[in-house]
Amino acid sequence: MKIQLSDLNLDRAWERARRSVLYGLYLLGFLLLQNVVFSHVAPFGVRAMFMPALVAAVALFEGGSRGGYFGLAAGIVCDLFFANQTVLFTVLFPVTGFAIGLLADFYLNRRFFTYAVLSVLSLFVAAFAQMFPLLVYRGQGSWALWRTVILQTLWSVPFIFPAYHLCRIFPWRAEGSPPSPY
Amino acid sequence: MKKYLKQHGLRLAIVVLAAALLLGLASRPKENGNSGALASTANSLRIPIQGAVGSVVDWMRGIYGYIYQYDKLVADNAALRQQVAELQEQVRQSAEAADENVRLRTLLGYLEKNTSFVTESAMITSWDASNWVSAFTISKGSDNGIERGDCVITESGMMVGQISELGANWATVRSIIDVNMDAGVLVGDSSIAAMLVGDYALMQEGKCKLSYFTEDTTLFTGDTVVTSGRGGAFPAGIAVGTVTELRSEAGGQSFYAVVQPAVDLSLLSQVFIIKDFEVIE
Image (cartoon, rainbow over all chains, first blue to last red; front, side, top):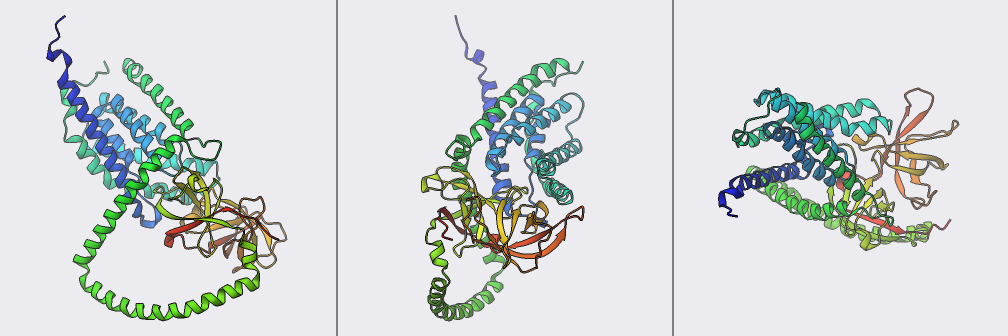
């Protein structure tokens, strides 16, 4: 049997490795910014939590499956790097990534406005999910919790710009046609 | 669409569930109170990274200050020189005061009550970045004899919090104002028993809540709050704070007190963990 170099699909493997490394670096960069640098910045006592915006951006450009796996990686590191360790983000971020990727694959365009709406929604959902146990299981006052949810979402909004443009500058999706709903 | 969901969604759902299960199991505390392998690894990685980034941030702040705040720095320098002179005088006075303090403490029997404390000092490496908890990581762990639930105090004996998670060379401290904090306390001169509980709204103000009073309880603002020692989690008599306000619960049937912690959490850099204690009544 004769195997040619082209049979090994090295271009594709190289592309995949490059993409993985790049998204890994994005993830690491956002994690450090969020948990180390911007953890010192807390206007009105509330810090930004913008990892969902990156998950939304990756999902928008990469589609449901890859968005889901990126969400899984982001969720695991977020859960590990917060003191109150749960599996909240490990479950939430892949679902967010997959849902946004699915919508982008079939129904939505990949323009900034679309992304802005989806990412703000994902930021809000993440903050709400963090609030939920305190609201339900610890019976804490709701006004203070909702205030934190709103401010956390608002403070995270500026980070949707770098997240979107970092993912957009590489036209990964151009290599193949998106799946069709028909 | 259905095919897409079946092909990608199902596979992803299985992977996510497996990962969540593994992470949950790996993060679950071991029988000896230590955190799981994943949590330990993550914290072992996080602490040096945060230390390095913190140094870079401090360095950048220094550069910024030098370039943009030169005049202010000159004025600050003069003020600081003046302050140094005053502080040197204070140091001389405080040396005398410290000697006096030792005598007074002995006189009051304080030392006799607390000589049984076995403490471990630790530096705070980082505060948690989340908006939903008040917790920080310290540089010591189970290798230093620290256990989950140990009481954490300042050098002057004011309560800071409790060890909530533990690794070999790190530990997470749940601060006194955290939502998940619960401690038995005594209030005022008449030593009224109550529970110190975390409250999210008060946590944001840097305060905590005193609850579960009996119906005929009388409290006053300014009453001091100390740990009761009941239950064995905390030694008795550790200073918690003072009552600053009395408020009604939502239904108006009962009331609770707002406690201002004795310790200023924002100024902490080093804490002491009480590893062992024996209360002499």
